[in-house]
Image (cartoon, rainbow, N blue to C red; front, top):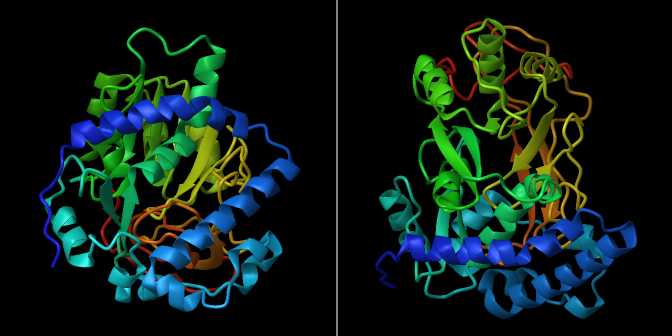
Length: 381
């Protein structure tokens, strides 16, 4: 069994931040690629991904037997075998492309994680999904994957800062009302951005609501990130005069942004809302401010280096507002993502995601007629 002490996170973070700045011009250029340029980069990325998977992962070598990476085109993507999360977790050690890693080692790193990730071999960090589907996922990202993940989320903000002549004195402060633990992607963001020109300050969504409001009043952030169900509560506080922060931008993440919630948030804060989709596997999508569409284009996702489709609620689903426990509507899509991670160098991965909303008591139905599946019975903070 491989043994490994946890590395120096500060050293890894400094390396990631420096490389993000070095790659910034390329990431900003991706926002303006045309369709032909996107397709070419996707094809080249897919072929490179397949070569690495076949060469380094026993699991993928078996499932991709007979696939010639040099002859693969984007139109062939639907024919590649799909890997489910249950397969990933069951075959975890064979999926890995660095043989020093194992599921046991990754679980040990996650168990030791508090405010900061615990690096493995000075290169890898581990994330876990929430497990709301009934199966908790574990994912490993190397430094390169984390650079791409964070850059894809931040490049719209960075483009605005560059257009304004750079960050203001003291930098930009983003308040993120989300997960408390760095085991989760949103919970790890403050640790990765600490000391940078764009800093994310975590405000745990599990805190008492009055404490969240007080912390935001103290921070007075230029940008406010958060779960839509929390942002709408904060919008109502601001409309009532109990929250006086005036962020220049608001970004929703991790939950479905319902149209009525968007309207309430934008009216209360006076700024358009951007919407994001991000998964621990490295899939990222960001909408333009005020635009309800999250598109898998270089203006919203890292599709210039991978091939992916954003997971959405089932087509046409707009659940009726009513009081309810957290409920969800499942949607399933397949995508291939090049994250260069040790956990899955190549995936055509089927994701079943959820459209979750917080409320209090009662029941909710999807407009498509499906009954909700309650994944948490307690009320939102």
